[in-house]
Length: 280
Ligand SMILES: [Zn+2]
Image (cartoon, rainbow, N blue to C red):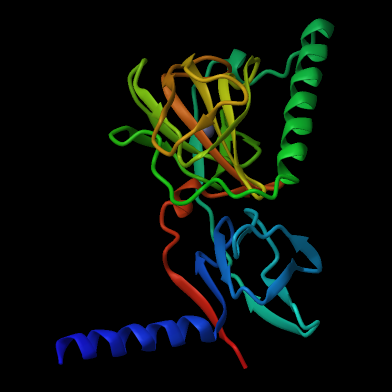
């Protein structure tokens, strides 16, 4: 009898799964990501009419800090039929962080020609590398972990910043202060897309998690991986430091989906069901 009950449950759950055309999990909010699982009959997915790579019936989409709220997802089935889903994401309010008394050298824009050339070349290399990874349709990530577990959070995503009374660009990452040498872990599985020692970033690691998802870890004292390395979630990639333009030992952890800036804190909490579309 018990076995029959389990069998019935199993059949019901298979039936439910087979009926689903799409499920979206994550945070439908500015700075959030949604992970989609689709029925095997779906051939293509478009977000706002732009094709999204699919890997093993899964895809990811993300929303920028100030992303528009209305979106259209289009699913193209093998039989040529189309399903269109319109949805809204939630608007966010961001805090303002005021810091005074920062030494001027941390805020000045460089004027020497040699340094300007260096900055241009560094920014160019980063842009080119990012563009290349936007096109990678593989999905390496499965789930996510925080790069430093017991650090002190000193900066959150999206906050407007006023330094010494002057507004600067909003903060696009998550800052975790920890002592020099503290281990920094990869937030998820992926490939090391770029490492370097740049003027602003200091020693950094940029990781490609597939399908446009990337993470960057900056101001390290030591880098423990090489470009091209395949790294598993939680593997050590470097150590905390204060290299580049940084006022103290901390990790600035940034997450991106294509050119959009994603809130690292939200990526850790992406299991929430947002939407289910049943097969008609
Ligand atoms: Zn930061």
